[in-house]
Image (cartoon, rainbow, N blue to C red; front, side):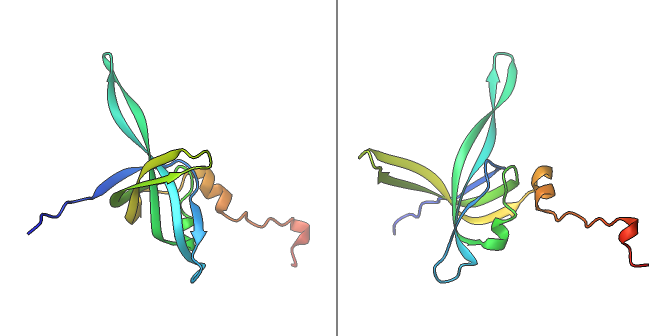
Length: 134
């Protein structure tokens, strides 16, 4: 019996940009999402330690439009999935190879960044006292 390889990756970091969402032809409320997560690793620099970001691409084939709207730049997430290797030939006839995480589970690890939350919240209606009906 052949041994089965294990291909599981778990990362926690912050989105580097808003999610790119491509709606499904069958159901426009679901689709494919692509985004990048910045994950810091600690590296010794002389006598000090510093954070060095690693940028990892993530692909989700099960994204809903509603969840996509919560994933904005700076949002902390935890992604579980498997590593995939993809290659293609670009317009200049150069073979491009990239590695990404094919997400099976995406969990929000905190609130939206303050700036994004403010932009998406509706402004409260303001009325002058003279405009009140009573």
